[in-house]
Image (cartoon, rainbow, N blue to C red; front, side, top):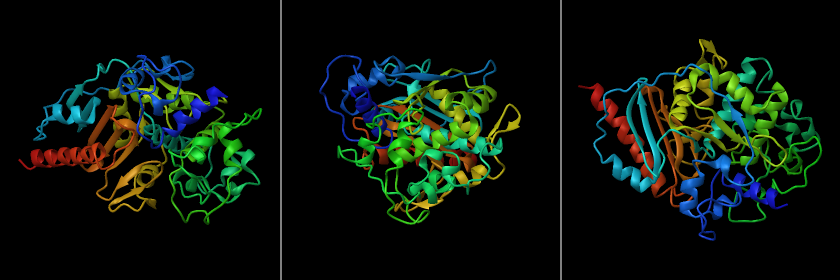
Length: 390
């Protein structure tokens, strides 16, 4: 039961969060209760998540050929980058523009030679695997019902939900993602007693009621991203780690192996929990910029990225929306985001990728470090435009 509770808290941390406390004092956490780790513990654990007690992972294998990221001319952003990183508590920050590294810096004892956790950045990886499964014919259509791929959901509110609605978090199934409420769905969904042959996420999600017609209401649901991972594994007959290695990690040329944390029933926690190097996060952004081509082959359907990375659902924020597990901006840019400062920002117009790893003082702070990160993205966009106008 303790392992299930720890996993639930870690999954809860995948989408949003509450301030971390200082209830423990050792350098490395002794359990998975990430919301209760100290800042010093997070500094250590975020770059070595697979060594934390009780963490079990699958490896995402890299290949032999590495996608080159050559050094380019340093980009004059017009601000003190070191001061920005210090306020963000960035462990790593890299800017790749037109395929070249324009800035690369590290801190917090991280040098880029190892991995750093992603949290909900992994949601966009999981979405990309859906596109690959459509391209490969494992998933026939995004308009197929979810129950065609996850039979365990039959007879539940998900009978009416399509794969597309799962991707856009518009299922209309009732869900509470309040991380401060121990009775919320996000706190409870991994505490269930495992059922033989069934992912623990399915066991919980099939009990949820409907609150709105499918497709009519957007609500952020980490549990549904975990369902997407179950769907992809069920459709392909492969682990998410193996499929990501096969479709992207090896053929595109990621530099290092990555790892993906497993949940209580042995399935990758697809709503979070990939650990990879900063440069490989940037390469994932470059893979998307390159149109989803890896090893000379199109990994994704022709129209996939046009839909995945543009607004499919409103989120009640001016100028922003939600695509297929990507946060979208009306200027054409989009991002994968995770708590404590993880992010991949992509701007196709400027051929720009910004990847950051971090350990914010609190899990989320949209009006503080979150707002400052958005301002930094804007400053980089302005710098690229200014340079291009010369």
